Length: 410
Ligand code: HAM
Image 1 (cartoon, rainbow, N blue to C red):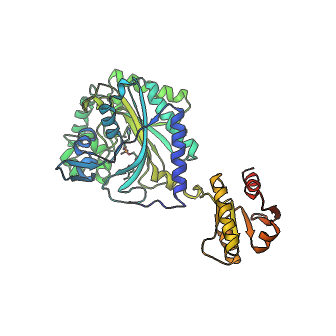
Image 2 (cartoon, rainbow, N blue to C red):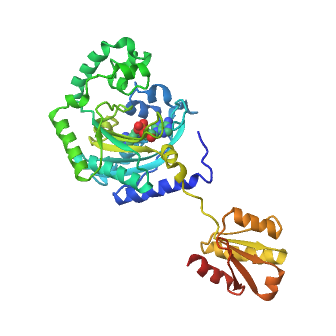
Image 3 (cartoon, rainbow, N blue to C red):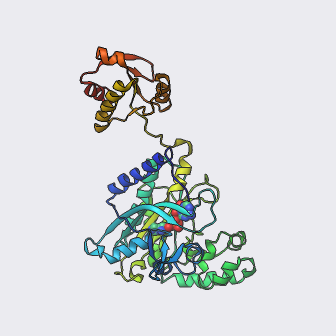
């Protein structure tokens, strides 16, 4: 679990502000959900035999004896909220997005943390493949806007309750013949949840599934047509993608379209965003039978990818260096007036020498410095120094806040 310190937080603010802007343009509204939910919500939606539910949840009993869990992801809580507040009665199509911390007890490494942050989006109420393409177009546009290009969009279809059972049986048969190669977890769960083996991180399982049957070859006519249309619309919108028939995803609620944005810049934690369709999830949680699709972006991974191109912290536009009590009082009033008008103004509070104050102005990368001493107060004029080229100009102290405002904001 990481602290996000000044110097780094500016990149976070940029990533969040861009999400508000881009997602807003696609008609999405923000939803804010609690960090804690009933444990049952996650086991029922993500799936009892997934790594998240089996091993990674921060679960505890509250003082009332209820089992609660720190949210490991945002989709299930958004569905809970959607159903609870009957949002489908307000609009047949809901487009929602969220951002915030998620919690998974995983082995930490570069790009994988126990508290991490997601920016996610969900659409409820549309089965049409246009929405699959639009959700991917929005994700693609977001990555263009934040300036991260080294990603590849991989898509797959996982079929539906009509075609999945047939595929499952095939896959179970294939795995049965290679049981000794599977990790103990997969040996235990391959019957109940063979798709989990496709997503398993253990080396033996990865080898064992190399020639496993592919789900796209087992799609029913409806799923096949839906997936064809998704690909057609992606091509229409000029969104580059590759087919990855091996992609299984680590959560059980997916049907049909699934996708990941992957990069080769982050080692083994290569997914910077992922998602898919979850038709049937809302109904299984007690809501109306509405289809859904969405994604979540891992914000830490974006920050890692931004690397050297991080957003620089804002620097003061003006540093007022004051010498003596009277000048310091005058500087204080002037600084406050400028700050009220939105100018980033700073001064010294520690009674430092003029030289030390100038050093600090330099260190803070102030654009201008104003020097106020007894002489300036007596003459009613002061020197304004442009710190980038060293040039100086004289300014009147009467009406100085307005003069500076014009100069600094102009
Ligand atoms: P997920 O694949 O579990 O999907 O997570 C989405 C993204 O969150 C990952 O691609 C990764 O970037 C980031 N992430 C996951 N775990 C960690 C971690 N321990 N440390 C850092 N980053 C992490 C979901 O969570 C689904 N709810 C996505 C979705 C939304 N599907 C439909 N709607």
